[in-house]
Length: 143
Image 1 (cartoon, rainbow, N blue to C red):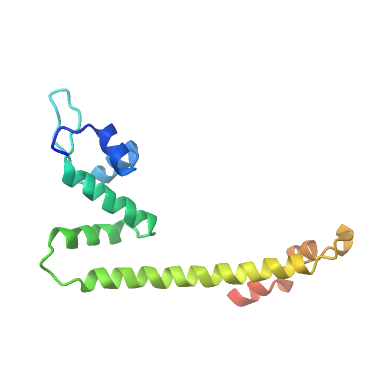
Image 2 (image 1 turned 180 degrees about the vertical axis):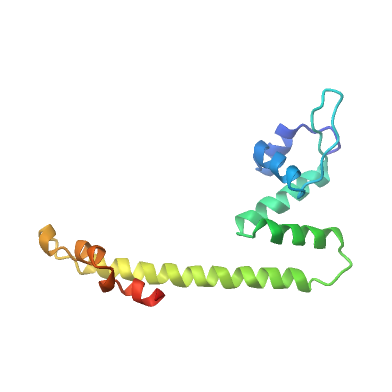
């Protein structure tokens, strides 16, 4: 890609929606591109690579400020990658905590469903546990 690529083509190539591209420009993650005489934005290969980096980072759950730091590091490849490692390790801790919470939630839902006698609502374990949060083991786990 050379300069002169329209925003729609960059959007298609990177999988980043046009309003999102404009937003990334607005918050400074993507430099403001040159414009045509008709005031249309034009992009190049580096812009597309940067957008792909941002999109992939967002898919992995990195926050905008973290991505900004990672982009700054990418722009200065001669420095230590310690900051990048720290950011990735922090994200990994978050993901592991989320997985643990979802695993506990799964166990609670399985317990509710397994406890169901498939009788009448008056003796339904699912309804009983939902009505009394104190009977929820997931709730006790989070407390």
